[in-house]
Image (cartoon, rainbow, N blue to C red):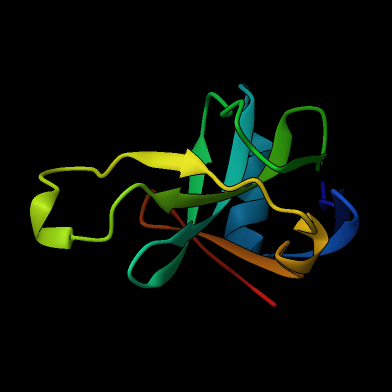
Length: 123
């Protein structure tokens, strides 16, 4: 089944661009999935897409693609910017955005290659 071409993500419409492989894999899924769009502020800004079985609670917005699939937007920042002082994963905290719509992505591209989800999002 073709997923919708758009989903409401907070106050913004998110355009969904799923490849045929991603669509086929989503159709084959029997358990819930959350596609998390993480906007990460630290010394630099990073955008990353995660596909999770368990959605995080600390997201700014979440939209439903179908009965099993949701898309979430999670802007976070590190507590410190000194990369060399942090071993492993840095401590993250949600960013309390005053205008979340200004930061919410406009599009998501998702593929499924060699058994792994590959995604990107943009403005």
